[in-house]
Image (tube, rainbow, N blue to C red):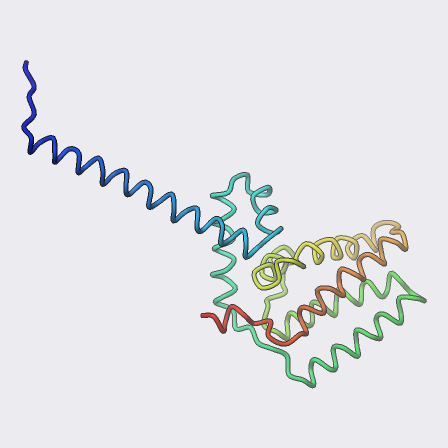
Length: 190
């Protein structure tokens, strides 16, 4: 058999190949932009998700699902009176740390959960709370995980005063993020 292509067939083949290459390049560039945007938005939480899920693609899918879930929540800013009340409660927790570090850490955990609930975050399961908070506060989500892990260990084993102090610092960082103005950023952007 003698295969001979006409000029028209060669041109058509070249066009089809060029379209496939262009589509591949477009998909690659789009995926790269998504990766860069998610990495920038989530920071260390992006790296944590990649480690947890085993690949960038799976991690990105989960992070996008988190964003979509949090966008469906009705999050709100705290009213000034609520904010002031929580700030006063936090001051009390910090003062009690001197006499009862374990009690203060437990109170800090409860106070952060109460603020999250008041702001509109569901607070049923800790892993989901941490994932939800990572959407708007990715820089402090890991602090929350570390502090909560220490709070959970309070009833199970001895924790050092230094660990308890560290938990309070982590809770304070998250507390500050949750009570400050303008933390419902994704709602305004939507």
